[in-house]
Amino acid sequence: MSEKEEKNKKEKSWIKFAGCLGGLVGIFAFIVYLLYFTDVFVLKKIRVVGAHKVNKNYIIASTGLRGGERLFRIPLKNIKAKILKDTRIKDVTLIRHIPDTLEIIVKERKPIAILKEKGGLYLIDADGVKITKASPSDNDLYPIITIKDYKNEKELLRFLKWLKNNNRYLPVFENIKKVVLDSDELVMKTKDGFSIYFPISSKKDWIYFYRNLDRIMLYLYAKHLEKKIRAIRFDYPRGEALIQFRGKENG
Image (cartoon, rainbow, N blue to C red):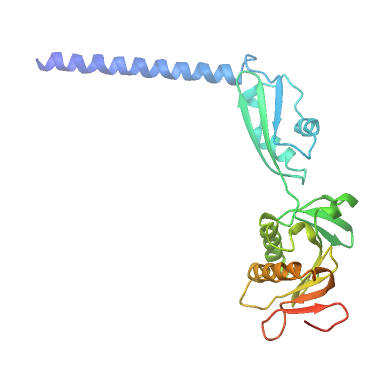
């Protein structure tokens, strides 16, 4: 093949490549035009998934969308911010579905306790976020916590989350009525009417103490002594558990 023929072949290849590239750019430009600048794909449906406590119609209304908006020009970031203004909702995922649907996937906050403050009682999650005002019926489901020293707040919430997820330990999560976090101790009062004391300044964490508490509770239930307990203390100076019975100093 001569030099001239080789040059012509390269030019033809380049023209062919440029033609293909131009065709692809044209197709891409047409798709963009179709999606963003025509009324082919307009919003007709909003589907809400994962909402249980929060009303689905309320979520749809909070988006400000009325239908008829161009599907691919809906500002998803702004819509997400609007929905997340509701403290009951932890996270939101928005998905466009061709030709006419916007899917809203909601992750609701899960209560872990009732926080007692001067302003009232609030359901809070494991991150310490206030979800809503607590109702009287919530008292049967979650412990009421009072935090006098917030230094160990995160540890307390992490501990309560562990206890809720490990409900085989005694007393079970649902049996904890009140929790008080102070600077030197954690005090839990059960629905059976006895108190449990954990130390703050210890090399061992509260999960370690609760596992030991479970062994003690199994023994007390086996001996039918659970109604006679006044307190179980793990803040005993020698690092041992102290069981106090009603009408007695210890046992």
